[in-house]
Image 1: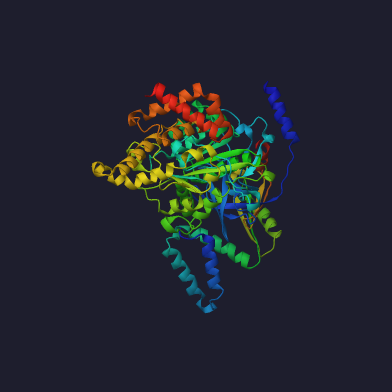
Image 2 (image 1 turned 90 degrees about the horizontal axis):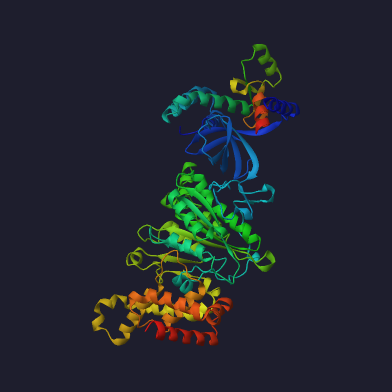
Length: 511
Length: 125
C-alpha cells in the first residue's frame, strides 16, 4: 500500500510541469479588523476576488476601494495569518456564486458554501451557473407590469395591502412586532397557493443569531416549505463583509430563477443590519461618513439591490423576483435615515406597530400607514370584490376609535361603526405560522363584511372562522371553494351559493 | 500610524523638489519633526525605505527585490546588481520559508517566482 502511494507521488512529481512567469502581485501594507490595505496590483478590478498569502494557506479578500496608491480590501475569511508584507494575487474574477436547482432546500453562506452539513451542493459542479453578486437591474424594456398576486396567507395583508409578483414591499416595525413572522408566513403560504406557479423562496438572514436561523430552518422544514426554499445565512459572528454580501447573494439566486422563467421571492431580514454592516466596512476603509455616520452611497446600496426585483416580460421568459425587505425601526421612528430611504425605494410598506402588538392584534399591521402601490393591479378579483369596503370601514373605525370610552353618549350610527370596526379588527387577527389559502380568506372576509358575524361574540370569532371554513370545505368544496380558487373570481352564481352556504352554516351550526 | 510610509515619501519629495538647495537641510529637519508629530517615529525605518523607493522611481529606476532562502555570497550579489541599471535599487532579503530558489519582485507589482515553495504549492493546490 505504502509502495503504491510513493509510486503515485513519484509519478506526480515526474509529470509536474513548471510554469514560472511574471505575474502581477500586491503587498499588504496594513492589516486589521478584517480590512487590508494593499499596494501594487495596478490592474485590479472593483469587486475582484483577491488571494492573500496567509501562512501555508491563501485567504480570500474582496477589492473594495480602488485608490490612487492603494487598494482597500475586505477579508472574506478569517485569516489570522495575514500580516503586513503578505503577497496578494488578483484572480480577474469578480465575486460570483454558483447556482442551480440543487441549491433548493439548502442553507448556504453568501459565498455559496453549504452550512447545513448535508454535503456538497452540486452533484455535477459543471451544471451550476455562475451569477455575479453585483448585476445591473433589468431595464425598462425588459419589464412588464405586476399582474400576478403573491399571497401571504395573512388576511389583513392580502385584502388591503396586496403584493404582486415582482413587487418590492417593505416590512417595517420595531423589534418584536412580528416582521419575520409575516415573511415566514408568506414563505409557508406558497405551498398552498394553488393555481399559480410555485414560488421559489429565498430567505436572507443578515447578522442574526444562529439560534434564530436554526429555529427558522426548523419551522420551514417541519412545514415542508424547505422543498422550495433556500436560506442564505450570515450570523452575527460572521465577518462583516459576509453580512454585507448576503443580500446580494440572495438576490443573485433569485435572479437565476427569474431568468429561467420562474417566480422567486427574496426576504432580506433585515436591511437595517445590512446598512450597519456597510457602515462598519466603510468607516474601517476610511470612507467619509455622512448622516448618522453612514457612507454617502447608502441609498444607492439599497436602491441597486431592490431595483433588481422585477417582473420580466414574455420575451425574457416572464419570470419574476419579488423582494420583501425588512427594516427595524427604533421607537417607531419611521422618519429615521435608513427607514425613509427604503420606504422611498420600495413599492409600499407593511407597517407593524408595537402598540397593536401589545393589544393582542396580531399581525400588528397598522392599516392606516401601510400601503401597496402596485399590488392592487395584481389582486385577485374575488378578493378585490370582497374586501373593497374593508379599508374604508376600518378607516372610519380609526377616526371614531378615540370616542370608544364615551360609547354610551354616542348616537346609534357611530356606535354601529365602532362595533363593526372592532369586529373587523377581530376577524383580521391571525396566529403566526397559520397562513390561510386565498379562498379561505375570501369566504371569511365575505362573511364578516356582509354582516354574518355581527351577532357572533368576539370571543367566538376565531371559532366561527374555523368552523365556517371546515363546513364550506366539507359541504361546498366543488361549487364554492374550488370555484373561487381556480377562477380567482367571485361570480354572481358562486356568490349566491356562498351566501346560501353561509346562511345555512349559521342556522345549522352557529345559531 | 496616521499616514502610510509611501504617502510620507511622496509628500517629502514634492516639497523637496521645490525647495532651494540652501534650505534643504531645514526641509529635512521639518520632515523629521512632522513624522514625530504624528507619532510615527517607531516606523521611521519603513519611511526611510519608502523614501529610497520614491527617490529611485523619480530617477526613472526600478525597485527590485530579491528573496532567497539562504544568504547569498557578495560575488553573486554584485553579479545580480550588474544585470540591472545603476539607477535601479536592488534589495536582497532572506526568507527561509522559500526552501530554495529565488523570488524577484519589481516595483512591488510584478513578480517572478522560481522558488521551490511555489512549485510545491502549485503541486498540491
